[in-house]
Amino acid sequence: MFENLTNKFQDIFRKLTGKGKLSEADVDQALKELRMALLSADVHISVVKAFSERIRAKAVSQEILASLTPGQQVIKVVRDEMAEILGLDQPAFNLAMPTAWMMVGLQGSGKTTTCAKLARLYQKRGKHVLLVGLDLKRPAAMDQLRILAEQERIACFAQPGNSIQEILKQAQSLFFSKQYDLAILDTAGRLHIDDELMGELVEVKKVFQPKETTLVLDSTTGHVAVGVAQEFQRWVDYNSVILTKMDGDARGGAALSCKYVTGKPIRFIGVGEKIEDLEPFYPDRMAQRILGMGDVMTLIDRSLKAFSVGEQEKLEKRLLKDKLNLSDFLEQMQGLGRMGSLEGLLPSMPGMPSLAGAQLDTKQLKRWEAIILSMTSQERVFPEIINSSRKKRIAKGSGTTVQDVNILLKRFDQFKMMTKQVKRGVFPRFGKI
Image (cartoon, rainbow, N blue to C red; front, side):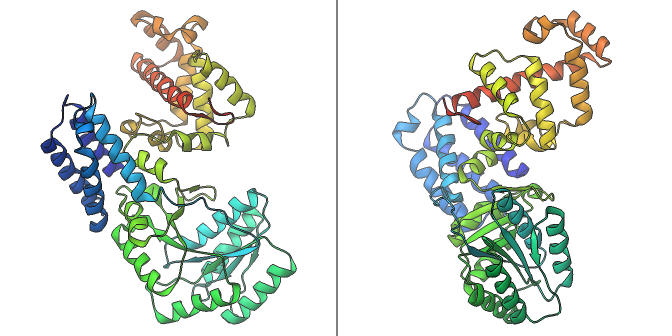
């Protein structure tokens, strides 16, 4: 996610922190490079201009330039302003129920899949959810919605062949008779915006009167997505945005432009094709992820699904005492493996995005397990005693190489760095320390 932009930001930050003191000329040069990075990422020109001006206004203050770490101070300004651009001021999203939630968007944006993902999410939260298929132009959309609903055992009303008015009447009757908490409406999509499409959307809003109308956008289309958002804004009074296909977006133009240009908050982001690959959007976390600072909180949120309460408590106790060892590391890596691709999780770990090319898969985990099990109990607790001769013995005993042992020890050091950041912030279950 946003690999290209993240790498460019990292290069800019290295130059800033490499200087003991900064002048206004240094800041201006960094801002020039920052603007070029954002423009190449397909960020809207109005966002680039506002972002740059706001950073300069704060970064050239005497308080920052005269500080002991001016480079770090400027980076903090960049992070804070990016979070603002992404919508840090938006209120918490609480959907009052019973209600309808209407999804709109162009064909191919991932709208139908997003409806199913949302339905699963709210059903997991204990809500009685009804999926409603309203795309009469693309019968396959009805079939797709019905199949996804069946897989997750979600109630679904999709009756192709009837008129939009008849479907709305029947769906509304079902919604009230079965006392559903939430109806998620998968409306029709088109390859382009036209009068017929908008007429249908107006009809749907008139009948169901949804409290939330969300525009689903394909983030990989960059500034085109922003243009679509502006066009829909002229026709449909939507409240919010969901960005899909974020896992395939190496640039980040849509994410960085959408809130500033439209004024509408981003509610969720789609981060994969699986039904569970939907995450709430947090502007501050996203800013850190884009800038290559990691996203520990999202990593923690995801870890709750993989680690048992007992595993969490064990790690927390050892973390408090600063007694993490290689056995702890192996347990956590195995847990992360249950969360999905380790390679995909790396950008969430502080200091780890630069290692995104590393192949951390199931085979790698097996190698690490073999290496750790080939160590003595003393070596697992005190890995600093592992010298060259011990590495050779461990490599031979595990059927690996000395290079593999070195890689493991390096990853362990990074693991300790990450967990120390968590210790200074928030634990998964017990809140702030």
